[in-house]
Length: 387
Image 1 (cartoon, rainbow, N blue to C red):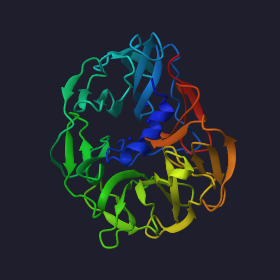
Image 2 (image 1 turned 45 degrees about the horizontal axis):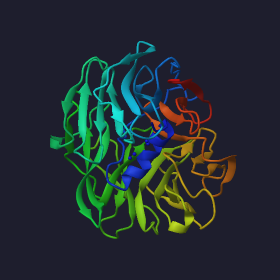
Image 3 (image 1 turned 90 degrees about the vertical axis):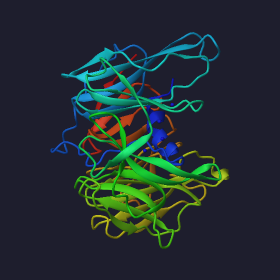
Image 4 (image 1 turned 120 degrees about the vertical axis):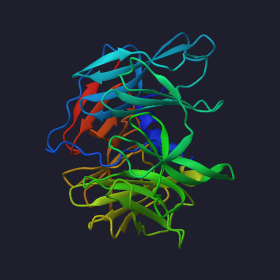
């Protein structure tokens, strides 16, 4: 995907964490940066928005939604109260609108997420862990909301434009999800449908990203060997082509993230490393393909004590040929196709980047509400949301 008030950088990281539970944050098919890779989308700043940006989602560079959280009282304890509102990007500027989310009190965390489904359309999902998830849908720019359900009903033959793809748990074993299916959130209603043609993978099948050629990638296990595999669809989920990835896999693999760079595709495996490594979002391996994903080479693998050991959100495969990993202990860059890395920034407060509809979206780990967006992973435009 699972990224919790929570910085937006942690919201991005949640896509990694939640995949282990089979509820990875949604990823859209065919998301592409600007046709001119040198031009970063220009998202306007809105520092006047009250509170802090907790979750953000863009349909394109002119349409987006942000959950803003404004807290008063003690940082912890019964006196703390947090009001949640929605900011909407429309007509080149941000507008503060109402949110269907209730006020949060005491030590309750912010557990909702927002998914932009097109101009004026979005869904919000609230998962508290103490009651069934609740959802709401708007098609008028958050002026009104109507309640929905996270239950999956019916099927859809192909993934519509602007529809997020996510995974839904079908079977739990030993306290974790052991089998999932792909589901689509419909842009015209916010309802969830099962994708009629599921990729021929086993285990936890999760969205893995999209490539500029329109490919939608998912990851799981090869049915015959049980080894890691990816599948790709170039017709919006009607048909799938499967490719094995060189093993071995992590003992507890959560999935893969696929990104495409100047001359190669990269598939980064994330999951649980041995406990002594003391990281939450482990990086197990990096695979590289120069033929569109038909064959893969394992170019990097986890070694105890060697960085990067963790990965927050997505790798950044830039137009200059570099590959950058934002991790818990720092930022690491490779200039040789992912075979070796050097640290370019220390500390875990520099945030994380995720591939989105508007290109790579970076959020600062230490300055909540500070973002960067890039079409090519090299040139970045920064903007600020909230105080």
